Length: 591
Image (cartoon, rainbow, N blue to C red; front, side, top):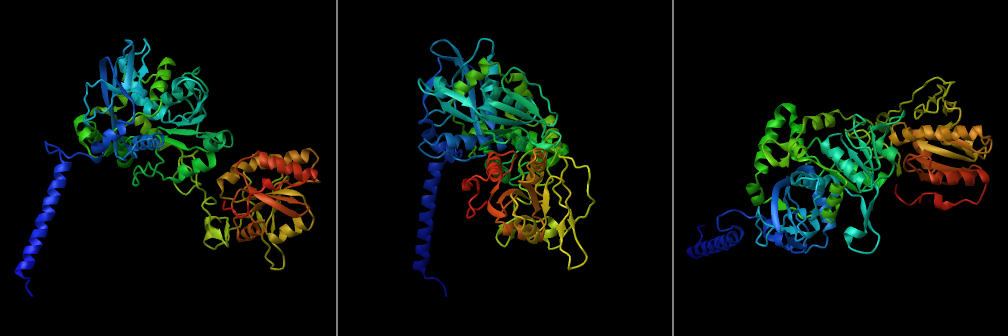
């Protein structure tokens, strides 16, 4: 059936109306010269008006700079947290750009500052309008060029990486702010050394970690130590060795999954979550650029050419300011006072160093370096985790990403998880070493079904328990008072604390307390061990079960020894004092 003429006329009218409204909308989106404006550019003045500005008396040098990749992603995250007082939430873009100027203020002092976007949304290269909070006085011995280079480099690697600022009262922010905390910097290049020196000069305890275990840094700059990813004879990962720290500056890799999910340098947000949960590190800054990521993905043969082509396009100021995926950077809080302290302390990123780090195609954007590429690719990997995590960073072990066994979060090795028990038999070692990795509990398996399976007692200081029956016989039946370490052979954390647990047991024996208090260990990676874990209400490893006279008083999850909670519990168990149930984890709480 053909449509009527009136119906066709009605459809035509509707179509013309839609075209009219679409044209009206496009007219509002496009500027007079036909250039598509970004959503950010249309609303940029809302953000700028909320931040005080001032004008320089005169303008000297200026430098346009672009941040991209994981570096810009990290800076965006910090700015969103800091600038929650803005009229609207800051947009999320692929690029951030800024112009850093030098000039003189009304007191004729040389200053360096971040240029502000004009009220019409345009960026005037020679404009003297700057953010008040971004101003820093330049010392006489520092050139304008070096002041600008230091400003640009410090934005992500130092200013955004500051652990915390404590106001101690009186005066303005510059007068009343003190900085404290602990920070880790990964890498050995110029930017890593600059970041480590800068943070240390501001009063932060800094640990510079790289493959070489050395770096070109000043020794008198502050509390600054250099270490390798593996620390000590036990080769403990640096994160576990350091315990809690506030910030991590990563100059050679990226652990942010929201930067580029297809990137081989982006290893997922699980590492960030573990940094928060295990080390109280809530401030992760990666300074990796998109050019570095291109070379890491494409390889040393094809990557550099693609990175240069990318930098040539993105590093063009005119194109960048018209790009709908970019925004003008607003200054992090206290960047001016922080930079002023750096310059006074002699922490400088020279113009020569900045130029060397920039792309060959543009001095506005950092490129890639062969030394950083080799350091990133040669960093040892941690094979105990679920991915190719760089060694030293926390990993989600098989045990920490648990298989649920009747509601108990205790995982088995791969062979156990597939339903194939894997027992290993070895001979008794008469000369036991405290440092020996004794996480694998040897199990004596009898061929006769009438004979019970028992754990081989390999460690002379620690009693090994195999299953529920042995627990009932050796612990409950003898009314033993003890501390029982619930471990698993593929748990990296369990392995790392095992030597300390053995030393505690040996000292207990040396002090003549073995008759009253025992150290016990159980392997949870077998089906028998899982049932034992369920029997003693353990949901994750490493855990410690407190037992007095054969009675279970509770358990707790501990990732490092010695531990105040364990020390207190041992004292109460040994002396027979009233038990403190606050030492135990809540059994109803998920681990």
